[in-house]
Image (tube, rainbow, N blue to C red; front, side):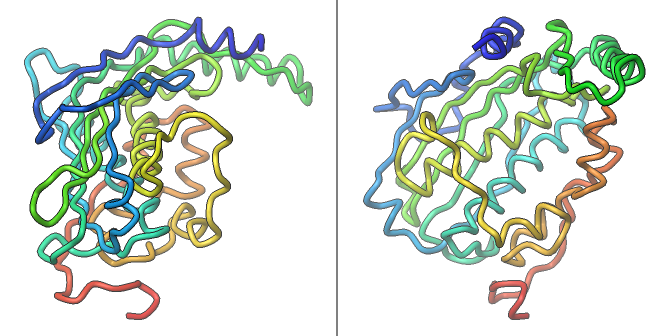
Length: 279
């Protein structure tokens, strides 16, 4: 409970923005998590009946006073798309952008607060100092509760006729306990992008709120892609491979995401999309 209180106390604020990218905001209901603010809507019967999904690349539009540059925004948006592609592959067949699909997914970043590189560096230095002073002693060093980043996103799943079948407006701030500091403007937003991808994927996969209860164990087939292997479906290759072990080590060392993540890798896709293993 102490760790939980610290996490909540040292958590960046994130606005629950509506940016107008959704076809409709009607019938959205509050579905907040412990450290997440969200509004959701889901047509469970239609979602469970769907077999194929097309994932439009997530967007992160430039806005006046945007704290992240074009490269940083692209990396955050792509992290959302890649996470969605991996998780939705658990149930759906992911098809190429020019193929028909039962559902089309579109996510848009509406707000991001930059990570303070100075504060992140100080937090990482404190963790290193503890390791030197108390080697082998498992005492966690909370991150400094200042300069934390945040991310706000909205997304929807539409059927082939364009009708909305799932929608989510989502906001979360980094916290001092569970978010490792990265010395980069986009550090926290990049990590939170995966959290959003997980939450929205669960909404589409189950037709129910992703908040509450214990998180499910990752399926065995997702382990390979997480470690930089080929995704289940070729359509996911457009979002690039996960950084794998290099990315994990980079995160632990506080490296900027751009040092280990190559981002999106656009490439021509065959007319008939299918599992990578069968090609």
